[in-house]
Amino acid sequence: MTYMQVSGVESIFHSIRDQVSGNNLSDNSKGGISGGNLNGPTILFSGLPLIPKQIIPKSLLGRFVAGSRFTSASSVFFRNIIPSSWPRSAYLPKSVSLGGQLGRVTSAVGFYITIIQLTIENWQNSSQEDRHVWGSAVPGAFLPPSKRNFNDEN
Amino acid sequence: MDDPLFEDIKTFIIENWGYNCEDLTRNTTLERDLGITGDDADVIMARFVDKFNIVDYSEFEISEYFGSETFDLIGPILNFFRKQKIVKKQLTLGDLEEAVKRSKLK
Image (spheres, each protein chain N blue to C red):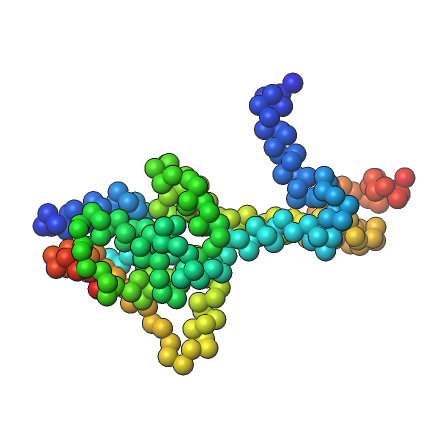
């Protein structure tokens, strides 16, 4: 048994993988974005500054909330649930607190999940001929056809 | 060596922000040089008026100086359709020093 299995990290990775690929979702939400699995776009839009600050209570973002500026749902959420005294991460975007850093990285995370979802969806919906054409991303794509191990060739 | 007040402001910026703070002068701008923008600007300015006891900030319109939270989609589109374009002002450390001296931020 590996360290990852013992610590539960492996199950977290599997959970994220299943969410992204839609493996453990109900039937009507399988099949990627067109099938209703909107995890990626939801995370992406929650990180975009689409909320007018005028409607945000001052108790959530401070006394200077005013004017024609916008904020994101993720920024308001993370800044209010994570104490500002927590140390910031050197690997996240610049911000005054860890909550702000997470709020700013959310749209990028949503963007990449959306791209992965679209790629998986395209791959699942594509024909075997299409997979041969853009198969450079597939292990074994550079092998001669007789050596490739696609399911329908067995 | 700058005067003690400006040193206090520099210390405040280093403690509360900490990025790009190698060479702080009175002409250093908060948004363009230091990268303070969006919700961070709200937080930093609120801490600033608390620490330096700025009592009057009623005329300070923060949206004239700082943009929206990063990756602003709406702002440039709105600005494109406005007849009178919004040109953002820049708030410098010198402006903050003046605000502390006058106890008024505007």
